[in-house]
Image (cartoon, rainbow, N blue to C red; front, side, top):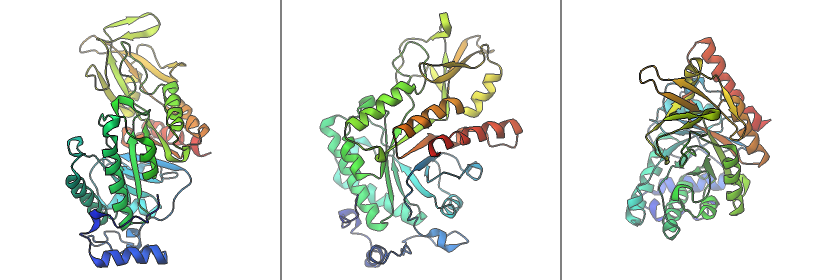
Length: 373
């Protein structure tokens, strides 16, 4: 994890001035790196400096829109990962709170073996981060990959980490992973990847595929088994952050069997079109018109309810998470002594001025306290 191997091939295009600035930052502790960037957009120019603090516990927040970030509860946030467009105001606000802002980025699997393409991509990501005064990168590579090709992803992450750390010794490098090693055919070398990254973000959601029945998006037992599998592979808890869903899955039932078992149209896979994802703010409205009310399933540690689609006449079953079920997951992360928790994604909530919506949104953010207390 040290930034000693900073003379990466991908950085040869940077000027001597930039390299001298890096040396100044490393040897003097000054974080006033001379960015190859636009003028600092913040009123307080110091907000364009590096975030240098490494928190003991992480709250890693995925943001997908620019509409709600001012309404987030910033009490425990340590990193915001942008899946949506960048705006300078978010960076300035995050830095004013001592929070890192990183951009999420994917890489085409077809180009993994192309060293030249990797080098160009890495250079582009570093230049973008430098230009925008952001603090690292979240690599969201979610492609099936055989173990025989896993070293190609490792090479990409290694080249990315070296290039970013050459420019910013305080940068943060993370990688999103499935709920368990080799999940969905993503047979990466997670041990090596963890050693290169600051931490891995475990996507503990999207686990309802492969069943003929509607089930939880993130069954608590599968979550536990996944963490145990990562640790069995030699990855320390300090390198793992567990991300929970702030959305649910709406299933169309072909038959409703005994004990509210919702049969669906054939077996599902990860991307089955017979189910749709629904944000929490929509779920709370659908719950008002449910035919069952909220039912908590002890096996999965998740709530669900049924409702009737008035247009089609079909019975639907919606599995989701709420503060009660999420506290189970935050407590689970705490019991495993993980580095932190996360959610996908923070914009699933209703940030309007409606009193009921404000109370529901506050309860979702408050549930995170379980991990930090």
